[in-house]
Image 1 (cartoon, rainbow, N blue to C red):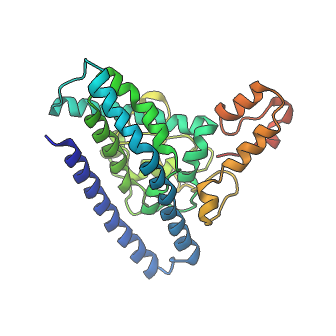
Image 2: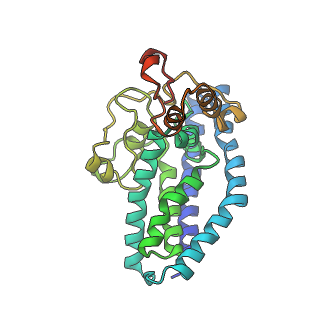
Length: 289
């Protein structure tokens, strides 16, 4: 089976589903007179994040993907023979890795500087699904490398990464309500709206990619109750593309520059996004979410 072709077909299918949902979202907003200048500019800001994201894909990730292939085919003699069963197992493992990748992106400030881009919109629509930080794929590649070391072929790891991301295209919408038993097992619009909420009970919940079972297993699940308030916890509403791309970077450098010890610098980078030295008090802490 040509898994590269299959991943392209899956990606295209979810892209078309997303496009269909976007058309409905725009028509609904237009006829209900909710299609405002701010929401349109926010959509354009979401689309603009693809510029630095794709540049990184072209100039950095192409070499990383080549390294994956070399590692898998030349340096790991115990690589599994591709089959449908191994492909499904790889997909399951990749979805598990994605849960932890996603969780780490929320819990480690350096990684949050990239993932916060995805959370910086006050809206929930399909275009938020393509709102990425420039270096998110670099982080993803690093954290998926153990799958190669286990013995999963590079082509199946690529297939799985693309499939997990493609699946999530359709869940960035308010058009789809509760889906019953489907909400119990899979990541759905209802589950993912919670993830984008900045209300206290919704923060850092529902990290799953395809399956929401990981969140239930590791205690990070929260069902949708009232409609979430979307976006970052701190007051951030910019639609300036450059601000959206790098919104967290200035504060990070500012905090590192005023750190008083190497240990504090380390924690500025790798502790939680809202971590501050105890002497500052929580009232002065960076709101980072």
